[in-house]
Image (cartoon, rainbow over all chains, first blue to last red; front, side):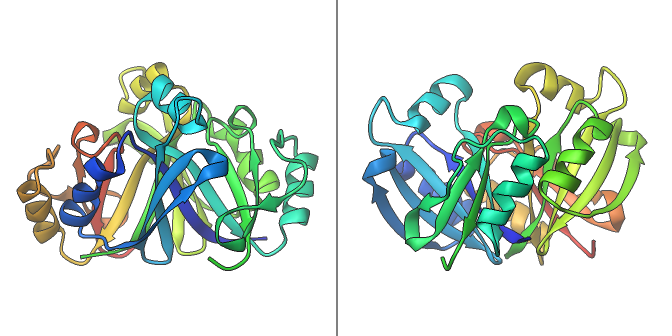
Length: 134
Length: 134
């Protein structure tokens, strides 16, 4: 079952350039920064209530985020739902006709299990399920 | 101060077509549907924790959502932050260099006061502030 929105992924060209907007214009506090080598991104996290905003900056031209920026420009990249049963959630999604990018959940950041649904099967919204503590 | 994410606006061509995805694939419950004549949209709401997902379907070719769909296809349209002081929030945004679409908040759905920031000044994310009960 989906329990909440865990985070929103937001693609940016440069975290350095975007930080003052999030910190000063919105007034949100940066909770941390991390480089995820496997995804070829740098990230910065902010909290808005119990939802996290995750800025994603590519570290390489062949990063998925670099490709997204090239096609769409900066903006919201994905929505991540927290679930209490990621395996059941994926089975339910598959049964309902969604296209799974990952048939099996894998270990994401912060020791969470994650998996994605393809936006072509989710009315244009790249959708992540995640289970585990943030 | 931003207290939480109030809702995410998601542009769809047809709520009827998208409903089974939200209800059966994600397993979310539709909280209600509404037509907002002034915005030329039909909406349907779902809850994910304390954040609402707001599907937006244009009712006319000159609806802002029709234009968004034409340019981008379906997907996340805007992010709405709940604030406890929308006037102060707008002043802070303006002072920080954001471009306000609305200098003054106006009455939106569900008796909330709302105002938007232009995505060209927010790193590609159409951003709404809202104050009041949902």
